Length: 148
Image (tube, rainbow, N blue to C red):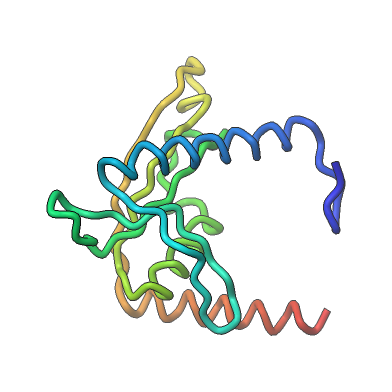
């Protein structure tokens, strides 16, 4: 398979599909229990699609986005070590006026000690300053990309 910029090998394509299936399974499962899949949101011309919006037992949004990841990254590393994920979820939070993100991560090879898969849930809270700084970095990147 080929994208606009590069060829994608079969292993990479398979990882994309695993991620899609993980997202679809959690979206369907949590729809009944804990989170709703929001429509695409746009801010400053940037389209975003958070995986979920958490809700409490009374069906009201809790003010947290949900992000589902199926990854080969080690479970020994927190999601805060992945700058792409942090840029993504901080952008979602900014666009939706929230400060919390719940990551539901399936680490396919666990922490790589024995290859046992690990499921981990992380709840992160961001300051307004972090969200503003992140969004400015996103907008700066848009300008750089326009110049190319």
